[in-house]
Length: 330
Image (cartoon, rainbow, N blue to C red; front, top):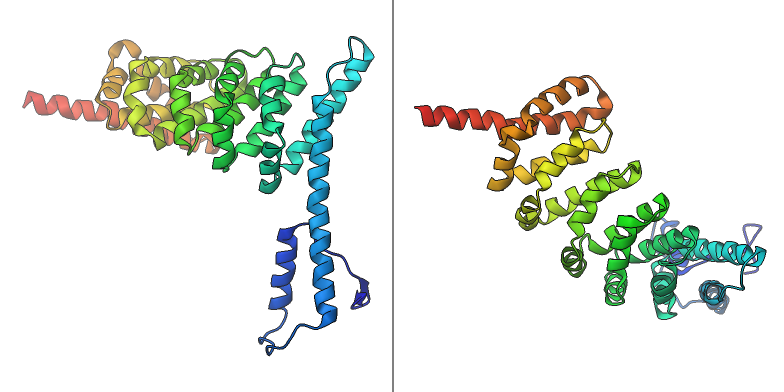
């Protein structure tokens, strides 16, 4: 079977491709073919295809080993050689991030010691381009991979990501570190507990107060996500003065991330008596702020969800309060 339909045979580059090829071949016939022994020619083709796939996967492992060899090299001193080294290492990280979109490769990287190298050396590297690429690679590997999440937590990744998110001087490093942090704590109970033990909510609060628009947006989104998924922690953040801090953020010049801030306030009011009392505090001036914001957002399609959050928050806090007060008067 050197050729089929006049075209040279081309094999899939990975196991998923081979399986898809088998599915496509099976669906090409409208009726199932009668059971009959596989021809020797067919067997030979299948063996060759499997060998080609295995070779392709092995090639990817070898590529990762080559990248890790580059990353394991020590600096050569000052000057242009160091710049060349950094560029080579940045390229190695970019290749690893691309390869580790495949979950099997991400697991192989863990086995090869690549994640320890990222955490121990590159999250604290002097070059910001290497710090953020290391964080990005960690995020790629940790997404939806409990085994890798557990491994990363075990080697002390989370405190380092929190520190980078909170105080790194380079804005891209902070954003990528927060991205990796999110991959370790969302839908991951052990990660969430480590996040709580290292005062992670305060880091998110400071992120929302930064000048970095991406960091503000991602911090607000993660805070809302965590409180929605884990309402048992509402009392904790309310006791930290989160309501007052969020309202202070809302008083800054309007930004798209305010949608997540108002959404978080809605979350903190629902089934949380102290959160409700904090929002109703006259000294906070939240009712007037929500009225003003609702007027500003009216008719703007891109802010429709934030407008709905504002209306909902006003309803829960102040219209309900008027109803409660009227009931007490009677």
